Amino acid sequence: MEDNLPVNVREYQELAKKALPKMAYDYINGGAEDEHTLRENIAAYTRIILRPRVLVDVYKNRNVSATLVRRAESCGFKALLLTVDTPMLGRREADIRNKMVFPRSGNLEGLMTIDDHDTTNGSQLERFARATLDPSLSWKDIEWLKSITSMPIFLKGIVTAEDARRAVEAGVAGMIVSNHGARQLDYAPATIAALEEVVRAVAGAVPVLVDGGIRRGTDVFKALALGARAVMVGRPVFFGLAARGEAGARHVIEMLNGELEVAMALCGCRSVGEITRSHVMTEGDRMRSLL
Image 1 (cartoon, one colour):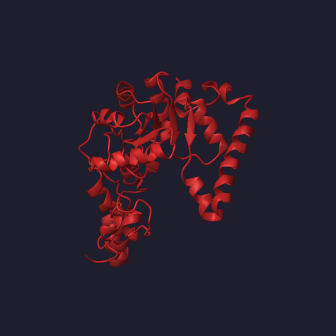
Image 2 (cartoon, one colour):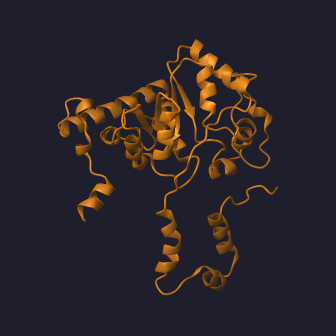
Image 3 (cartoon, one colour):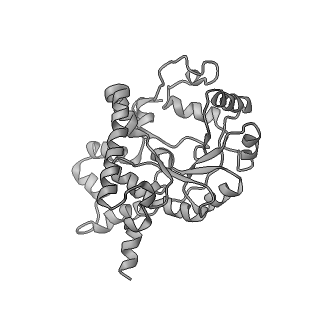
């Protein structure tokens, strides 16, 4: 396959603009008058959010999954987080362009065979995921996982009330509202927008955590106000680690904690337990106030 192929329509459009005479390109791409409707045809789609439903993905080889669980137990971990929103890998165009390759490592030697998947046509990670994850598994497989461990199981990747209620029925210990860092399905709901729906559906039966998009202590405050028991932070810690090693990762968490304390003080909260729904106003609240 030809190297450096476009990976989406927008990139083809950019190439076409360079290849065509201006008159021809403008004829194909243009609209009437101010071109408002032309732009709106595209923009209107961006305002419609998808509601993904989740299955449970574990390794196709159950022995691998069981081995990972036993390793977690022997290392003293207190709970399992089961990712439920990756029955297949999302289409990550940057990885496709970069022909994503992981550095060789001795970690999990003989367990994860990602090096066996070539990168001739795209992301090595995507090929590894296709070969390793089983999209056919479903909620019933939580029972199998519960049967091989005494650790509490949290489901990571819940964004709808329907799946939240089903998770409670399945006997999980808790759940994380997550869209996999927006790396799976584009136009899935933002996690902070989905949080309250999940919290209401669970109705206090199990703790609900949230991740995704947290960059400030005020973001943590907002998530707690909307019902999250705690937040999980990914990219900011990676950024700190990449910039300054362990010290950078620690500093990122310290900054978030300090910002949270300032937000609490200025909102009149002496403890996390005093943060309530009344401390935030969402877009939905503003719309209802206009009715």
